[in-house]
Amino acid sequence: MSYVSRSSLTISLFGILSCSTAFAQSATGTPQDAAASKGPSSLSIYFDTGSSAIRSDGTRVLDQASRLYNDGKPIVMIVKGMSDTTGPAEGNLLLSQSRADAVLVALISRGIPADRFQVLATGETEPAIATAQGVAEQRNRRVEITWR
Image: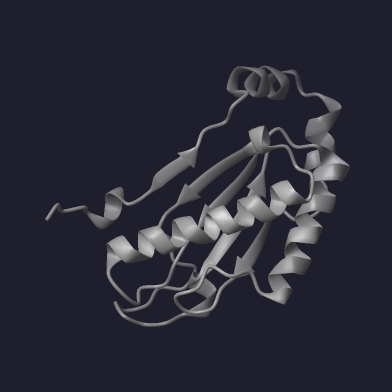
């Protein structure tokens, strides 16, 4: 059995495929940067306990994220999956990855190019609400979508 510390549970599934181009564009201060700053700075999709299925309220958030992308054309959209503290840390990391992957697939199906994403899974290491181990907290079972 291998040991994984909770502080090292953050993993990345996808890198930014057009990294050098993205950094060059962001350094120039293009009009895209100004357009991408309109609206909220992040969106969150919440999940049921132990699930990576996107609920109907999450579908509305995905539609909003798609509109924001189309309006601002950000260089990268960051999709970060998270979990609450119920269950083992390793399982929560895998669940948070499944949640992030589900959101990624849904955003790509809405026409956002796959090379515009960075996908992360942090398991239970970045709670919105601090809880004791084993506490089910819906606000911690989420995927955050941010962009730059």
